[in-house]
Image (cartoon, rainbow, N blue to C red):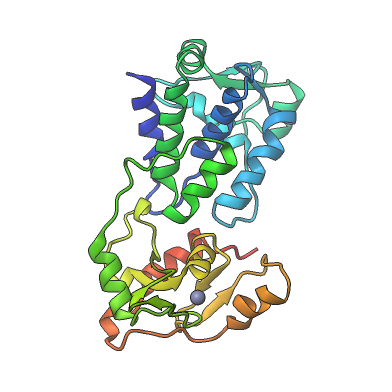
Length: 289
Ligand SMILES: [Zn+2]
């Protein structure tokens, strides 16, 4: 199997509806480092522990604890794996699963990275790095975050495979009367809306349907805030603001002041956000910490 196909399998792997960003983020981190000339293997303690944890905190779902050691170790367990561990033999597995504890990885200076063959094909073919990175980003994150991730990792933005559903956008904006459901922003130029977008509540990447009941019309700011988990909705269709939000007076006015305020809803109840979609967003995207 080609490296790209193997990665594609991992990239699309899902445990039901739960977000699984560990392996994609670990791989994106490794690829971005290779691009900067990093050697094949990464040391867990100094090069992965904090760096991949930061990525999980920022781009993964809100969890009680974060485990950068999972993808570092488990990528090597994949069928037809392209990921290799060094110094892993001595580590004692935990009782609950076959992984060692983080402290073991540190104690034995465990290193990991792509295997020699895959590493060779990556560094001799920089386009392959870009192609794999694009795939990982597009399979796992919504449009609003994709660009941010391309910039953060310094990959070239690939827009060739962007999928859009023009009917979704049209139907959502119409249902919400071309206004942001949170703040009411409704700028138009000659009646053409500007900066008002149709957001998916449950991400398309996790089979969120392109239906109005999984959509909400939002201005660009509130769209980004929703996709990043800075805001969500509760079952009463009121805005909930993440305790992780910081910022000055303008952030108070644009974000915090809407906490616990009802959103503007489509008149027909079947067009309003469905509870199951909200539930997914609260669990998998909202930064509740
Ligand atoms: Zn808004």
